[in-house]
Image (cartoon, rainbow over all chains, first blue to last red; front, side, top):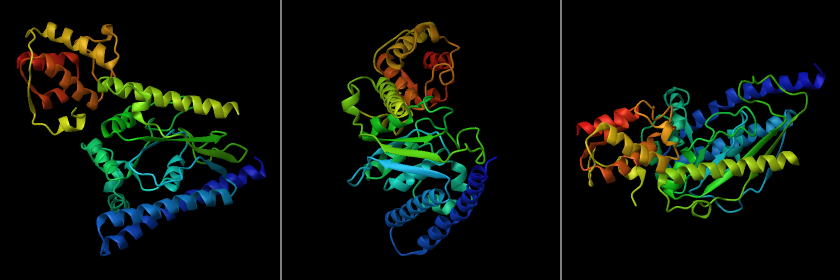
Length: 255
Length: 99
């Protein structure tokens, strides 16, 4: 193992500890906020803003430690409201990029986080949706109509290769039912690391280069026939999105 | 057009309109037609034993759309909640046949 590789693994360990300790910050802030005399919507906005800032800090720190380099392209200039934000999911830190660089994002989180005594308060105050909520789609639709953005990883879990892209229909269901535009975010890590079945210390010999690209907004009526029965719309839109990512990733990989 | 979410808020019984035979086989045949047309499935995949979720890649939103389509062709009340709990095509046909 080279000295550089040894340092990267050490840097990854430092980052892991930092995530753990930094993760307490939103919890403490949420408890303070919960006592503050302001309405729930304002508390939610403030907490999401702190979570976004913390995610950007993590990324900045990992760059400083020499673990990653990253670039961000095509970030929307105006305020983003009521979008279904989707991203491909190849590595452990994908959500940091989206939460850090997209405003007012609501996530769908594991229900266990909403019951964990350490994360319960921030998850609830941030208005995140629990993944076992039987009204998940309805809640997400309401949030979109209020101008919040909903983050969905259509693959559901980390993929095994960049072009695997097994998309589930949840994002398409939500966009069609809510008549919401979709903001596709492309995340690529070269070489692949922090993926499914990879431990945090299994790092390649070179620094990870992450590219975050905001692709053009997708308006559902412009890409599929919305007069078709809905089950077909869900399937066609899911296929369209998968092909969009496949083509974009192939294009980037060809250089 | 009402959305899948709107349908979730409906009472558990839906009044059905047109008419089909009570025969379970005929009901399965009709379900097969709907699923081929609306869910991009091959007719040969759809048998009484086909599991909606594991074999046919149907999800809960699809099930609601399936109920809406069945509603258009069956002249009976459909227990929406019972259909949402069905695992196989045969289960769906059985519930409709018993009503």
